[in-house]
Amino acid sequence: MHSFQLLCPLLLCNALVVAAQRKLQKVPEQEEQEEEENVMRIRMPQTLSRGWGDEIEWVQTYEEALTRSRNSKKPLMVIHHLEECPYSQALKKAFVSSPEIQKMAQEDFIMLNLVHSSTDDNMAPDGHYVPRILFVDPSMTVRADLTGKYKNRMYAYEPEDISNLIENMRQAKTLLHTEL
Picture (tube, helix red, strand yellow):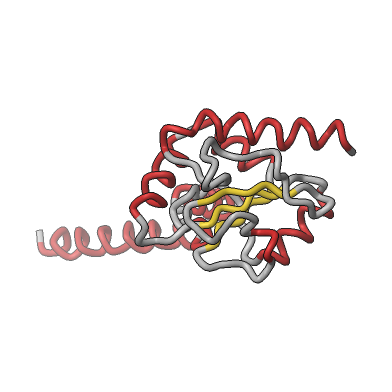
């Protein structure tokens, strides 16, 4: 009986050691696959998105945006907004809620959102109000033909203007292909 009492803890310890060794001797391929799965599950939001769409690749500066637009031959979409502006917040919510806008922004545009004014006067053709959205083609021309519905704030969009924004995004990429 005495030897049985000693044998049980030894068997338990042995089982723990074997399990630990197996865990340490995982096949490297399995570890890489598990690591990739973990990265996919824990995707950190981009700080440059500022809540406008974490799945969208955002550029940091206007100059970088122009260069990437020219090199990729994709139009640039510039969103001017302020974090504490209720109109900007409302537009952001509508922008993020539209799968069509999110898809086009991901696939067809160079995207930039600015919480400060650009030094380029072309980015404020009718004033420095927010929110405003402008389109720039790869030749670095601001698309004055793609505007919202307001005469006194031509590049302003409100949540109920999302269909107009979607149409302008389509035109920005469609007209671009026929012009190049």
